[in-house]
Length: 108
Length: 113
Image (cartoon, rainbow over the protein chains, first blue to last red):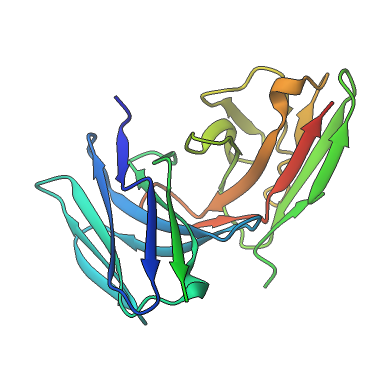
């Protein structure tokens, strides 16, 4: 069983829809990271959180430490949000463990 | 502030050839790492370094070599390329442990024929 599980693997939405991507993990962590990767592109850090909720523009990330679960929400989705979203967890050492990613496609 | 600079962006190698993927960061980060990304799999750690002169193996180190002579640079060497090393490679750096932001290079798309 992978230490970091993401769902869904693929997600197709219409422009304007509210999007939720989920991440569950099975190990103790010091922080959880949400990353974005556009097709053929590099990886960009969206959020790093260890408790509660963070918001940046139309993106919101939440984490429930007791349930070992995090969600990434996108409000009023746009075609430019189409990308792979990756959840990663960091422990007390330097290493990150990654989920397999969620491919989001937002159609106009 | 350039962040993490990774070169080249694309590379095609013949089986048995060697090459070096370059990675440099200008943020004075102690921790640098190399990952490979393959379809249907999460990023997998190849090698990492917690400071100049210190390197260690990750999850998939076979066929790769690294060194860390300075804080800024962390090159990845493919000793004798194999088709199984066809992948997208990412270099990353962080200031400290797993609760600090990670910065990634733009990736290198490597094809071994």
